Image 1 (cartoon, rainbow, N blue to C red):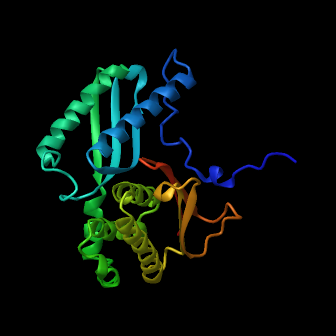
Image 2: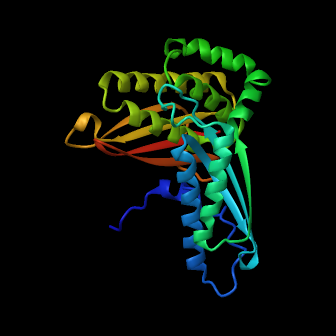
Image 3: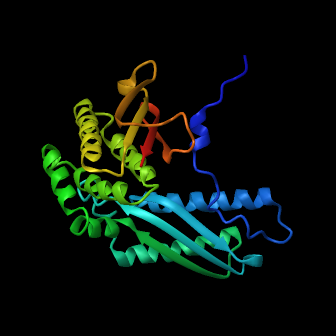
Length: 270
């Protein structure tokens, strides 16, 4: 028998948002793809070091690297207890860091003009909480009132509005799980509380949302320094994994901890 292919790999997002149609003169497509992937990784590391979860990054280059246009949408984790006071940055310091970040593109050969467009998804979620999903947010706050004092409560509420409205936000949810699981994985009591929160969160999302038909989360790794890797499953609703016609989104985030590397898989069917 031949080797079986993993069907989940076919659902991974392709590299279609790198604007490969604008090719350079005298540069091979493989070198251009390598350069643009390195720039996109540079973008994500810049934001995630400052506790911003990046949804997507897009940039467009004109001919002969005359000008560079960068677009990035991010979700801010407003956690004052976790982040030290030295790492809390105001808008002015963030703009200074953005200017410093744009200056680093000279190492890639972009010495000309650069434009940076940022989309803050927190503002979008706050607008939806006050207007469209006012009743739903009150309902999910009452369902999750036991976790009101926890650090992951407020970011989860704003992610609830984003998952209900915009598509492709499952990558933010997988990065959200990875961020807090890395903090709580050493303490068994805190990690169990976070796992219990995930079960309640998925149940409340599917009960209050008509657009989101199903969600599935798998966390795979060596829990509590066990010899073999195990997996945790959180599932609610229906997930048609046998067809490509269904709008099923699959997102994967790798997390390196002191116990090893964990894989966080998220399926969203909306």
